[in-house]
Each structure stands twice: as structure tokens, then as C-alpha cells.
Image (cartoon, rainbow, N blue to C red):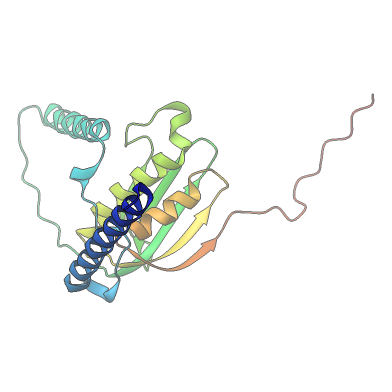
Length: 202
């Protein structure tokens, strides 16, 4: 046998191995049950634990700051709060506000009562990084994880603004296990609103 024939045989064997591995992976995916609502997300549901380390540290720092402020206000006295009754909300609305400087994601019920929200600032992004698609992806993940506790499964998305994070925020909603029913652009458009400046005389 020539060297060319040997190499083609090796390539064929490797291809067969890859195909068998792919089939095994597909069979595993088929046997796994679909999440509630019948929606099978393209990627597994992401927890807050899977966030990048720097974002996790910043979120934990914010929590400790809040608890410290609460203790300072009470001057050592700890007041017991009544536990709020959790409302189970399966369908709601997602408002994405994407400006040139920031991205904000708000998840509400059908009446517009806020379930959870997140912005690039609370995830620890500063300056020009706040308006990036990566920041939009991270804050969407944070907002969805908070809303999961209320049982949110499907949302109608309303996008406002022309920032760079708008598309990645919508995709992140879908990737994090929420069923996106509809997407509507509610960016305000002027209908010949304010009078234009007079042209410069040059």
C-alpha cells in the first residue's frame, strides 16, 4: 500500500469516529426532558454561578455594601420584615433600552409590574464598556435569573433605542431559556418635530 492510501484510510476512520460521537451526543440530547413550557433552548440554562469571575465579585461587593448600609441605618436594631407572598408569573414583557451609553433590561408581568431589572452599571461595567453587546448579554442573564424565581417562561420583547446592545440582549433572552413570543421596536421617531437650525452662511 502506498502512503496516500494509508492516509485516506486514516481520514476515513477518523470521520467514522467523529460521526459515531455525534450520534451519541444527539441521542443524549433527545433523551433529556424539555424544560417547562415545551421550549427547548439552544444552550442550557445559565446560572449566576456561570457568570465571569469579575462580574461575580462586583455583584457580591454590591450585596455586602447594601447589607452594611442597612445595618448602619438601623443603628444596631434589626427589624423583622414580613415575608412578601411570591407571585407566580409565567408570561410577561421584556423591555430593552439600548442607548449609545448604556443598556437596560426590565422584565415585567403583563400589567407592567416589574419582576426584575438589570443595567450595565450593576454588572460592574464602566465607561464605554457599558454599551457593548457583551455587557448586554451579561445583564440579560442577570435579569432572567432573578425573574426565574417568579416562574417566568415566555416574554414579549419591546426594544427601544439604537445602541449596539439591542440585538445581543434579545438573543440572550432566548439563550437563557425564555420563550420569545414577539419582538416589537418602540424607538420614538419624530414626525417632523422640532424646527431645524437655520443653515450656516458660508
